[in-house]
Image 1: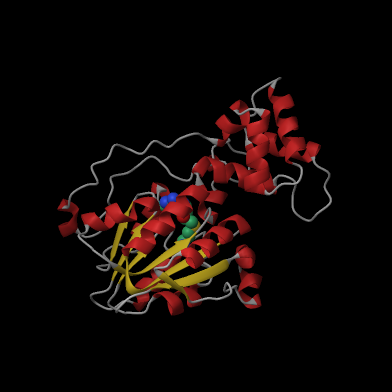
Image 2: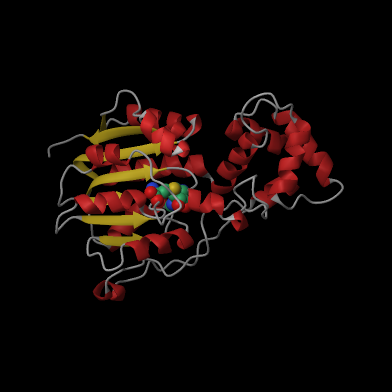
Length: 317
Ligand code: SAH
């Protein structure tokens, strides 16, 4: 068993599509615990570089420990929509490949204090980004002298608690319907509003109970699944970040450079597909999304819904 909680998906496929030059410059926009990053680093030769970005400082620390002293690695505790800014600091004009492995990591899900999981009692938080550490984080001493991003700590924004306890019925219904694609959005929003009249809804399990009471349990998926997904997407502004992040990444790719995106639900996948198709700067490499082999799904159930899309930047190489 690995020492790391999060098991990366489609690793072989990512290497095959992403690492086109062993001495290239790559960005892992969702470094997490560094599962994919480790595989990429193994491929790189002396001059290759990998820049890891994650807005969760806690998880990025694990990746930093994992790659301690590794000359080809450098990390930034940032939102990936700021990829351009990160590259400016490093004086990098263009990159050979960029990876997005979207969504929440198992590391975050399993930490009950973060409030992502309805099977673990925790506060209704769900913010993926954490209070900032010093950013950027340079592993080698020499680089530690480099300039800092010079921003005030990022405002972390609203928690799931704020949405659940303060939004109107209509706003809640809209979020649950649109981001959760939940058929019972009205019933669920109604149940939340009626419960919070008596007392604020404070924990993941309290919220989960409300959904169990409001929705008939017919399908295999738990009645809280879609609403938790919806709240998480809203709290972290995930779809807007994805749209911006993709545009920024496409902008910094060198001709021939690759963009690889792994998504885990249809809302994300639709954005990726449409962005790739409508971007004149890109040639789509995967006509259909790449999905994991049965063998991978067996050992890593989280990979079940993963879809990888790859595109290449056009232009003279
Ligand atoms: N590939 C990683 C796991 C990634 S899980 C591994 O193999 O270990 C997704 C990660 O993306 C999470 O750690 C989450 O904090 C991060 N993330 C999600 N949205 C982000 C954003 N807008 N900016 C930066 N990081 C983000």
